[in-house]
Length: 277
Image 1 (cartoon, rainbow, N blue to C red):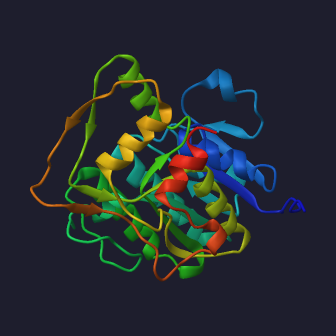
Image 2: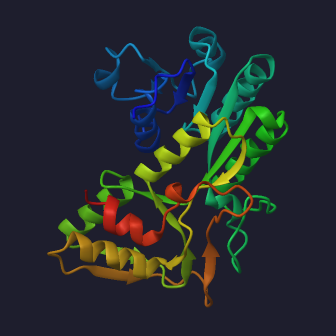
Image 3: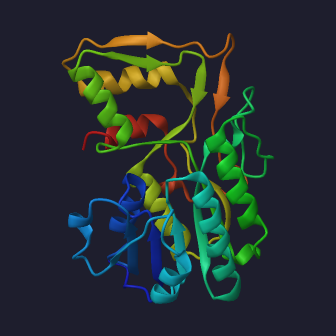
């Protein structure tokens, strides 16, 4: 039975990117959904649901006043300082309006920890510039009332048209080496599952911190080799990169905010059922 279209008005910032556009495609049949694009103007300018937005040039507040969203989903990329400023303005808007902010964060907020996986309530700590950016924006959301903030921490996201799969296919085609990290233990997800999970979180009015990775872990080398076996008909060249002498973890596992069983996933599920459908 199809869910009735909700009155929720949703604005997806970065809706022309891989993840943002997949979320738009999942939600637009059910909600009054709008998106932003920065490039590929010919693909979006005639779509009345899309607005041009450049994080370095456009005042986000003007766009928010036009759309008046109930939910803002932030999947924007670009200049880090501009992202921070944009989120400061978004949070000012959320504070004074009946609006929730859903922020797509990353497993990299834990990349300083290497000896164990990370859970929703663990303290964030990152050695990377990217991870520290995500932490800075997360901390801004954590100062909002709990009813207004949703933080989604994602591991590596795969899918047939994902940048990572496209890169692997290009390297295979060009007979170039594919980097694998034998000592990296991580979890993954696929884009179809992510969009279903976000749909559920919005539909059931959930808030808080969510780890939307597979419920199990795998070595990076094993996972990439299994993907390439699935693609088939290639003799891949691997470059094994040892970033440490011991196994290290970069995994976001759910513990305190678990979704229903039908919305959970495994790394094998990503390989078997979703990458090449």
